[in-house]
Amino acid sequence: GGDAFAGVPQPQDLDALARGLRDCRRCPIGCNGTRAVPGEGPSDAALMIIGEQPGDNEEMAGRPFVGPAGQLMSDYLGHAGIDRAQARLTNAVKHFKFEPRGKRRLHQNPSAKEIDICRWWLDAERALVRPKLVLGLGASAGRSLLGKTTSIQQVRGKPIALADGSELWLTVHPSYLLRLDGEARETESDKFAADLAAVAARSR
Ligand code: URA
Image (tube, rainbow, N blue to C red; front, top):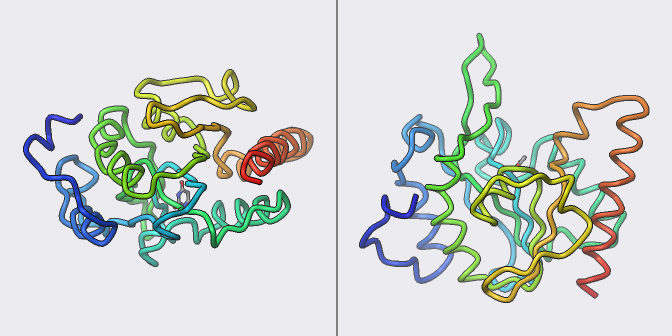
């Protein structure tokens, strides 16, 4: 992935990073005409929360985690005692990948290659913000942060040391909870809440 950025200087601050994202055409998603959604939140946040990619709502608003999955996440953060406004919210992939279906835009998963290209931006953002704790939501965030595809179910609930000295916790993406119902929704929601409670305990 990094080859696409050969010779590109590291952004000096988060504004420069956002400008760079806006013009990035290094992967097919960046070339699809949507607007890039930069991270949001304090430049010195102790906690960085990393999703997959902006969705339909996020692309329209130009802000991360404003749609249904983001709202569900906010509820769970509040319940765990984590202040969303104090966290840096961002994504593994900065443009929205979708398939047009009539008037709707249906979410599509980014490919491993697309995640690996966009990782350069996430690495730059982590280097600028230097969070102590990183919460990765879902397999795409996991791939970006670990550099390989990893089973969330196998690694959730325990800290993973990252090379920069920060501590990574991986859990499922809240949009996964939105796709479940009944007993599965309850069980998985409880597990998600427990994972966030563990992160909250580390951030105190
Ligand atoms: N909104 C985001 O910004 N990212 C996600 O991963 C999901 C919703």
